[in-house]
Image 1 (cartoon, one colour):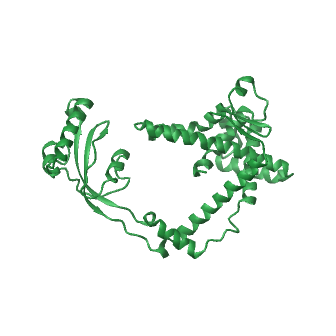
Image 2 (cartoon, rainbow, N blue to C red):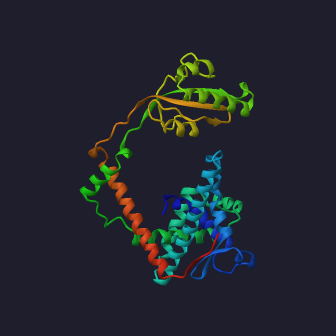
Image 3 (cartoon, helix red, strand yellow):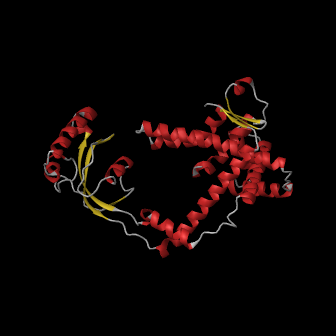
Length: 327
């Protein structure tokens, strides 16, 4: 189960409240049912509405990578569906087991939520009105969120998880690259500004021709000193060291995929085309086991807790009626 499920909880709850997940739905919603959990249903519209905030972020992040966007969208869709199903399973288990969380505790938690998130009840009401949600629906959502937290805290606690020194050492050996401080590189690049070279089509054509010349063995620095629109005097050499994340995402990905002395394919950007060459690489320093021990222990604790959570939900599924349909 991916970690981003927790980020969907608020949006999911609002969607379920808006659509009334208690089975009394209109025929139009029934025609788009994508899952049934005991006596509750999940519709296609509920999933899509719950996905909206994340989809907006994906569109911005992968605007120029439609294939990758499609993959991320499909995964988000599956994660959202699973989160909706798990929510209903927890609430069903709470009712079936006869748990009874005191209403005084719930009311106190709701007051704390209002105070921390909205400041006061008046601001809350205005916010709810903008979302077409009543206070009663908000309170029901808060109550069910608290139930989920209590149930998961009881059945999926870290309290009895023990991480041994051997597990920590084995994880460190198997994942050393995770504990390096970060690679730095120096780049030479040829940048062709689109407005200076006949627009996008003409610039790409020229960039491909230059790339072929470079592949034939010509000096990158010499070619850059003639063609690049930036750092021409230094043969395209950018003077400062670059760390991962220091460039635009497309350039960053291309640059840090290179080994020392390697050249990238043509990278097309809105402003023009780039050809990159990794001139020098400063290998990352590996943190010692003692320096990263606490980090590894926390990771192993979280991994084990997630594994237990997945097993718990699988047990809940086996004892419940869960049916999914093609989206």
